[in-house]
Length: 397
Image 1 (cartoon, rainbow, N blue to C red):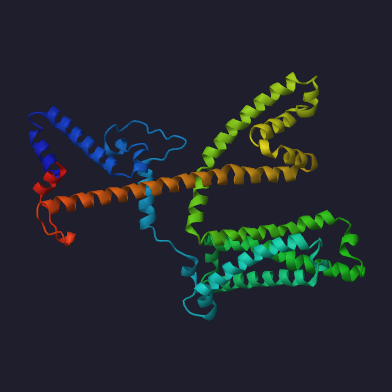
Image 2 (image 1 turned 180 degrees about the horizontal axis):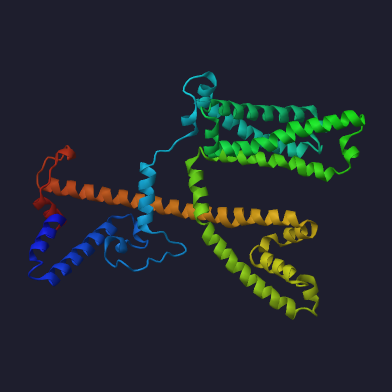
């Protein structure tokens, strides 16, 4: 149809060029409107692609803070469909025991299970192991640490040997990710244990904690084990629903940062005013003695009223712990919990929409069958009932 109409307009262009241009613009608008109506409802509310189609070309397309262009979404979907994803297994040798082992599904599932067990083990050891140095810990904890370190090192070494070209491992982000976790684990479990064993041999049977004196330093070193918890990301990769939530949080980062920037600007402006006004007052010495103290007071009172006591206790004890607590509240309370509310609302909305469509389909089916029965048709097998255009118009009337 577009080619026929285009040829018709080209024949009439010599006699009435203005009419031909007007008709072309009308058809272009009609096709663009049809294309927009055929989009999903969620995409139809986004900025239109009229500039791409030719109508309104040359106008700058402004992208809002919470909006995405429909054409960009379509292009990304087309790219995702046509793109051929290459996995780490594509770089392995095709023959050999270790390459086949590294590419097997059982090897991957065993690794994921060990990651979960290691995460549980870290929690148990954190509660029960009070020794700042692994050499002074109970033999059970030493055996557990060496077992997990040996397993993950053998798993990493098996995958590394399976590569045909060892330089290809630098192209695999998950292998680089595992390497970044493996290095601190080997250093903390084996290198430091060997180093402290040598110190013990040189210093006799004196405990390492009293020998070195700085127990806090050892505890900070042992906090390297927290890096191992990042392996949970590999488990999340196997759950598509969790990846959708994580990607949604990633896409919303810009909007969240802008909103937090606005909140901080309001808190800072208000804290300067309260600090100046209450300088000679008792409440000023208690809550607004300085601008940072005033910002902390306004933040926990206005944003986290239920956590006022614990945040004050933490900030008076350790500023780094307070910062970690604040980041956790920001992610868990403000982002994930509010996202859960949005997910529940979306689920209820989708269930309601599905139920409504089911009711509408049942109503149409019963109406058609009743109409066909009144006309004396055989409706024992509804699939055999054929309707003409005249029957459809009569049924709609």
